[in-house]
Image 1 (tube, helix red, strand yellow):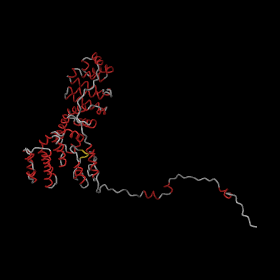
Image 2 (cartoon, rainbow, N blue to C red):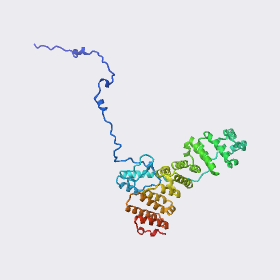
Image 3 (cartoon, rainbow, N blue to C red):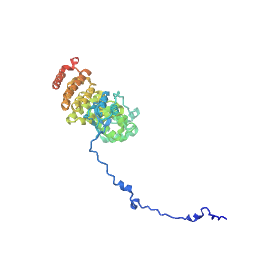
Image 4 (cartoon, rainbow, N blue to C red):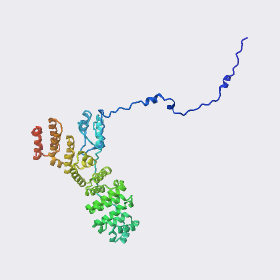
Amino acid sequence: MASRLPYIRPYGLFKSSFIRSYTKFSFIPNPQMAPHETEILDSKVPDMPDVSKGPRLYTDMIRPDDVCDLVLRPNFNDIIITALADGAPFTGDPKYKLTSKSTVSGSKFLFANITARWIDDFNELLPNLQPIPEQKMSASFMTETKRLVLDKKFTPEVISSSGDLQIFIEAVKSDVGLESTVEYLLSQPSVISNISKYALIMDYLTHNVGSLSRQNLPDFVDYLIRDAESCATSEKASIIDSFVTDSVLTLFPDVIKELSPSAVNSLAGFALHDHNTEAAKSFFKSLIDTHKMAPSKETFKHFISIYSSIARQKEKNKERILKDLTCLKPIMFHYGLDANSFELLLSRVIDNSYDLAQFVRLASLSPELLGDYAEHILLRLHHIHKQSGQSQIAKAVETTQFVRLLLHDYGVKLDSRLRSVLQMICDEQKISIDDMKLTKAST
């Protein structure tokens, strides 16, 4: 009889193994228990080598909006010449330098697509400006009811001193408003003919500019500007310029964007009465940025005259002049050059043949200037050639190209002065003046 295996109850043998136990957790940082190999290796990674003093294959590229310039407007030919040159330096000349607002001035574009995009972006920074529209009548804050109230309380003595003026204004401004009160006072014959009384009223406004209605402020400033223009004197111009610049725009800087273009142009003119070219420049920039308009030709011509005189007195160099005036480049291209800007740029800014060609193109917007100053352009080219390391053949080719540009493309007449200068240059460069075929351009 076979023996029977003993019966084993499922899991019965392990029943006694399920006993509760407890484990202690340690919060000791790992490095104190045993440093890991990775942490030891991390601390031994060497510092990155210093390669700042080594040669660089590529240089940082100047941003189009960082370029300081007054004459450049590159066209398709410039794109082709730049793109085909080795490394695509601007103008194709690796020695050509752009003046920059920042520390980056490199203009090596490397590839044709970058060249085309950069030049397109650069030209977009030169907007076409519109002339300032006809001046409109400024808003009036006076009504017949307000005038009757003011007539009853006004006597000539109220503007005899600052104390009397303050008492009068405080007594009526709650009924008629500060703007209406000032308009009434400025219309009085005794104020129109007396600059000291006008200054008294403006001094009160200066100390109480915060009491003016912000909503009416642009129209009120516009009114004050028109009033000052109606009796234009250097004293009034100085007073209104100080009030707007030092008081209104200091407290409400955004008001400049809400003024009419003609009012901003007038403010630039007031600033120029005191030879304040920086303030005038800021008003010009506001016209360009906010309204895409140019100031009046007379105002801008006055600015250039004053700035040119200052630049000569202070011996400003190319870099300083370009940084001062680059924001006004759209106005230069809107009006062209006058005698002052022509002489300033030609003598102190133009120092290479590419810029000279661009300068001549800009000057062609004022054809009479090219006729009057053609010999100065060739003399400047001659000076540039003396400073350059070009070969005689390259100099002769450039001279011939500039003569053709002036005489054939822009129709400058070959008078005795121009012929004399041209003959001197041709003799030095051993060019035959007869080979230039100038007979069609001769007088």
